[in-house]
Image (cartoon, rainbow, N blue to C red):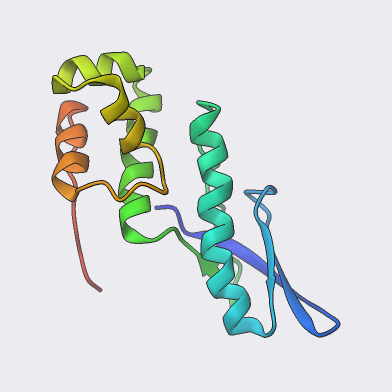
Length: 138
């Protein structure tokens, strides 16, 4: 769902990583493997800017043949999925809080990608939006 294609560019002794769909996410690593590890953090940080600004998340374009992709970690991906459902439906945080019977700080923490929210809270928020959370190992 949030699988963003990356461009890996050798830059002297490092490898630069950039995202065409998320221009705010730029990082580097000593080699390709380290650069891709750093790319997850850069992507999550950049996507958190969209959430904080209450902007729609960028749509991930289709990767070209052989192009690497990076996605947020599972917990952050679940949070972003709930956020995306909320924005698609035009629901504000206050309305989500009302539906869940939560206080606003609880909803704010739910969308804080650096906060370790509980999976049952994310699942409850998804249900309040008429969605369900699906966990899969592939």
